[in-house]
Image (cartoon, rainbow, N blue to C red; front, side, top):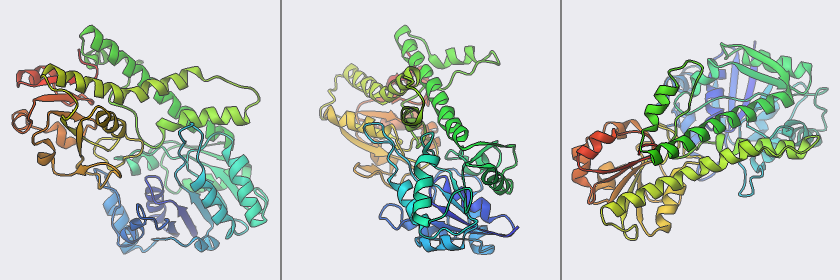
Length: 442
């Protein structure tokens, strides 16, 4: 079937979705990306057949080169008028929350308003951005209808279907994970299901638009709560002088147990905000108030972990007679996820800021991230470590797992190693002469 598909937003959701759809015979895909200083480069980058993501992203280089250079079925522009050609429009823009934990829909509202100016009868619009339950009906639909003069479910079709992507597995998690599709009516749902059948190899489940929105936010809230449990138990194990990773291994030996991994903090676009989106949805559109005590407390527990890593750093420095004021601290990893370049809501930022508030001079390193706006960042690991009073691992990048302890100790001015991601063995590290502090290791 021939389709012209417009994908708005060339990020971690939009790029893999656009590339996979462009690889389907009969599909022509046009990506839309705003020409901003931070992300406008993606237009020319992708149009030259290059993968915009660094880190380990299996299959992405080959796929983008194929659909752009060989098939010529994918191109990117900043011109929203291409929406006039579209049979399908996917909206994949950022939907962050603000400091008051309220969703900020500036990008979503802007994209919808732009789409509405060019929306044609018969077009299917699918929201793939994570939103508070109720947003598709109460925010997106009115903008599209008012701007276009068309009626959803009558003149055009509207659905919500969320991606379950994560850096390092962007393609796999679209093609090989079950898919949930919720339309505002039966025909919207049917058309969206037919679209995703072209790229999804697993079961596609149709449901209502509200159920799909709830499933997305509840799914991530569930994971956030489980990570919070693991982080709290890590603190318990530190206090008791036991290794939490050994306890986790013992617990998970039972097949119906799955204690998650503790660590330096929870990052990414989804988990830090989706509990708040869920709360906003029920507060705004629910029939009665629900306090959501467990999910909001879990958010607080996870938000505390970067600060706990800083406390471990201060303790390690103190054991070597070094005050944080004036200390040089090397932060290893600013991406939120190992072997990726994704810095969205990275725990590295609160770690850096808390160390700087203590008077430390912080130099951050990441092998994949180009820049971390407002912070000193380098890709030269040796220079980062040279003369540092502590090395603090925030991200479990593969190059850090391969570090030679003798080499590392020879570079540091003070041999303090703080491990936020279970990269090093405690006994080996201490035997090598380090003061070793780690989340979950007493």
